[in-house]
Length: 156
Length: 195
Image (cartoon, rainbow over all chains, first blue to last red; front, side, top):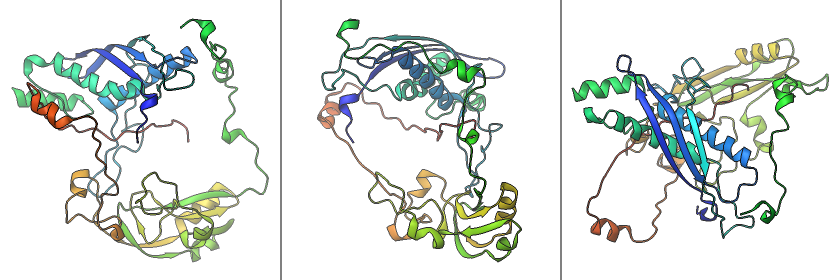
C-alpha cells in the first residue's frame, strides 16, 4: 500500500519527569508541529492532533491488551486497562507548518493518525534522555513504573 | 495561503457541543424500536483455541421467551465473509465454525423477547470443546512447530510484505554508523467507554 499522496509530516518534542520514589513517569509538556497540507477545518485538525497525542501517550505509558498463556485477556476492563484521562493529558503546544500538497485537489495531506504514531517513540526517547545518567533505554512499551524500576535495578 | 485562496468555506467552532454537554445527545440506544423486536445474547468461547465438538441448543430453546438459537451452520447461507485487505486470509463470518480462535469468540446467538431471556438462553446452550494450545505470542506463533490457528494455511503467518524504496544497501554500506534495534510495541486499541 502506498498512500504517498497523503503523507503528512510532523515533529514532536516531549518533556517528561520520573518520580524518584515511585518511578511513575509523567509527560509534562508536549509540543507538536505538523504539516497536514491545507487544513480544511483548523479547529478539527488541532483536536485531531491533541487526541492523537493522548492516544499515543496511552500506548507509551499505560495501555496494553495483555493475555495469559491460554489466551485469557488480563486487561479486559478499565480497572486493568489504563487509558489516559484529562489528568494525564500533558500541556500541549500545537503548531502548523502547512505546505500545500501538489498531489491532491485541495492541497490537503493526511492528519488522521498524526502524533498517535510519533508519541510512543517520542515519549520513550524522552524517558531515555531523562534517565540517561543511568544508561537505560526503553525498547518496549508501555513504560510502566514497574519497567522503569526493573531497568534501573538492572542498571545499578 | 490566504483565506481567499481556499476553494471552500472556512469552518470554525463546533456546533454539537451544547447538545452534548447538556445531555441532549441522541445515541443508538435512544432510538425507538418496534415492539416485536427481539434481543440477542451471544454464547462465547471460554477458550483461546479449541475445537468445537458439539453445540446442543435443546435446553436453550426450552427457556421461556427464547425464539431461536443460531450457529454458523444456520447462518452461513446469509452471511458473507468479512471483507479483508489480506487476500490469503481465511474466510471469517464473525461466528465460529469448527474451531474457536480467541476467548470471547461468538459460537451461537440466542434471540429472545428480552435481554434477560436471551442471556438465560445463552447460558443454557451446551457447547463441548476440545482445548488446543493457544497462540498468544507473535514470535512463538512463527515457530515451525507452533499450534496452527488455520490448519489449511499450514502456517500462522497470514500475510507478510517487504517494502524497499531507493537503495538501502548502498546507504547502509556508506553510513558512518549503523544502529540496529529490536522494539516491542504493545497491542492497544481505541476503547469506547460506551458500547
